[in-house]
Image (cartoon, rainbow, N blue to C red; front, side):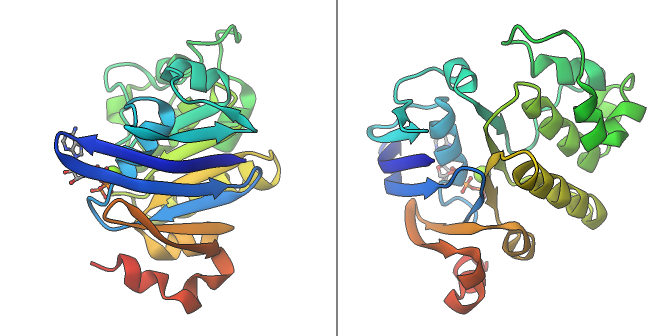
Amino acid sequence: MLEVSGLNQFYGGSHILREVSFTAGEGRLTVLLGRNGVGKTTLLKTLMGLVAPRSGHIRWQGRPVDGLPPHARVERGFAYVPQGRDIFPRLTVEENLLIGAASRKAPRQVPARIYELFPVLESMKRRRGGDLSGGQQQQLAIGRALMSEPRLLILDEPTEGIQPSVIKDIGRTLRTLVDDGGLTVLLVEQYYDFAQELADHYWVMSRGEIIDGGEAALMHQRGVKGMIAV
Ligand SMILES: Nc1ncnc2c1ncn2[C@@H]1O[C@H](COP(=O)(O)OP(=O)(O)OP(=O)(O)O)[C@@H](O)[C@H]1O
Ligand SMILES: [Mg+2]
């Protein structure tokens, strides 16, 4: 289980994360929903060790990861698909994937299962990352994250700016990784319908605080859509 307790984070004088506490069960798909600017990306960066919290604790599989640099968290099984994807546009698809394995002793080739999950990446492996569509780049970013063989996959708004057919593919792939691979997924989203269809568990963030959470089956009756409506 991922256990986050009492996280506080500031940018200058602005209090961005306020006593954030939540859990994400192992082998489950947990979504964190919230409007623009409530602190979702800041929270994920804090989980990855890219920014240090003022206070609070993060535990994974019963062990604290507080203070560990990002690469050490990757070694503990964390992987991160950042908002906006951060593909290297001038490197090929294959090179982009291999960068995901750079911190491991893993073989210097892309495992077949990555291409099985994302067949489009195999057919485009010699193309430059920058030549791919937004949806293909998102699949590439997820494939790159999977190269480190994570146990916890953290994604920041993977549906942002992507066409509906690819959104469906991404949803199916995440579900397969959880159901067949036992992966734990923490997904930040603003797209309610996608999140509601996919999630096992949900949390809602507003102005740096967790304001609601529960089993995904309760999302409709709890009125989660209204909590994140713009
Ligand atoms: N590097 C930074 N320095 C100062 N303020 C920042 C920085 N990054 C984000 N902020 C501010 O912190 C708040 C939370 O930003 P964050 O990016 O975490 O929100 P978000 O929920 O991910 O938003 P979005 O839905 O637009 O991605 C916002 O008010 C934002 O302007
Ligand atoms: Mg964000």
